[in-house]
Length: 257
Image (cartoon, rainbow, N blue to C red; front, top):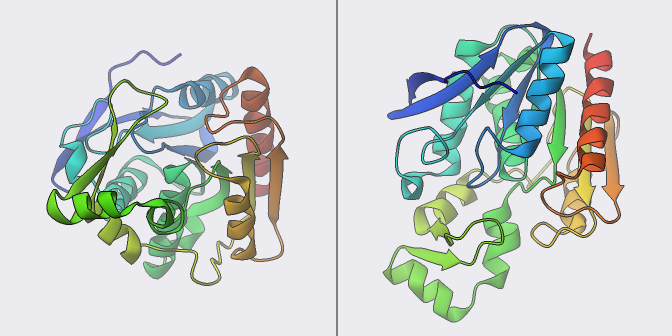
């Protein structure tokens, strides 16, 4: 386990905490989910794997998350995307494999699009997406909003939702929904130019496995693997889930060399 203090940097106007382990290529970049942090079970398992294999590994907390500064309610996909790109460019070299969990998978897909626009598409050598939730604000949440919740968004500027993973409720702001609409990726082909492996639990109460199937439809036909875990939940943090994650990542590493 990496118990070293994080490095702090400024990105998108916030103080961002980063942990970087030097090592061989391709490097691994962790992108966490909504309200998660870089010291969660999966992120720590990857750190142990990277340390054992001498692999470069970079992870950070988005603003309003974990050890980073900033207010959580000020966060949007664009803001967290911008921070993730700064971390990638400042702390990594050469091809990287992005490991995106839940919302982090959305960030990863948007990173690829932005890097390709900037002529830096070769920086991404592979994608490992865990319970991916791209476009979750528009595709998963908006259809479920009651009239009362829509009214709260309009008048209060945010809604609260009970969290299964924290005593504090989840907060979703109007800005998050509006910005999410501007960052949608499930509108056409997402040409990643790299191998993609998706792990998705079929017992996931937060992101239905049909959403992963929808994502596959928007990815190129070749170089995409979808592994469905029949009894897997959203966290995918059981020992057998972590073993699958490491196995999928090792397969991507071999294909990136």
